[in-house]
Image 1 (spheres, rainbow, N blue to C red):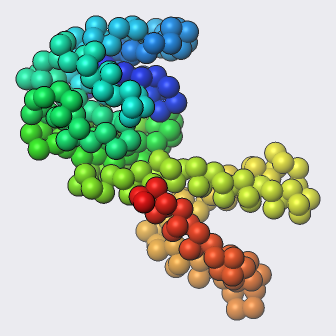
Image 2 (image 1 turned 90 degrees about the vertical axis):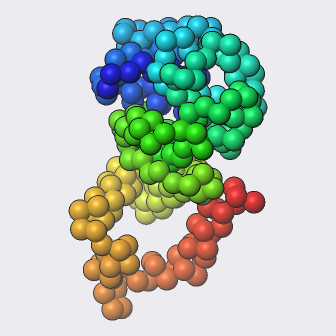
Length: 261
């Protein structure tokens, strides 16, 4: 991809994106900016071709796409720092800060620029993110294609209306933690039934991977797959009924909707 990328913020989410993009080997140039010099040094040691700086304004000069991956309350500070160095006739700005939408970018920068709002998840480091992307009112479709191709380097990307990004964030960004909690519970159950923790983890992870691979390969609805492993009077239906009695489905739905209140 023939463009220069700048990422501001190299924490958990920013770092995952940087790892994913750097490992892809598909970008002309990647510059990362963060106030943590030791963190920058660790990235530079792993990916020598990266450009690193602690100066946000310097980082954006010459960039084609600028991705802002900082905490939402830091966004106004960062935008004030970089605003004098921006050229919105040539540069694309992407907010990866939760709920810092394209309208907020317009308000902060005072111009009708090519703004995007994207929410990936930490699996981006392994090219397995589920990212949600929306474009601002004044962004062109060609610019959307550029940003979408960027996030597709680190996983699946879905372009959605801006009002759906929050729901996507609950399902995929917060949701990845909910999946981890299920895996942990399955591991604990395995330990109670006699497996060592390492073996219980292996079983839980491979079972999750098997379920995902099965649905991806067949296109089945989950209930169709469930029907194929559930026999009358068998042990699978007994376990499924216990999940239902405990309100499993309802608990999952409530967890996803909790962050939207």
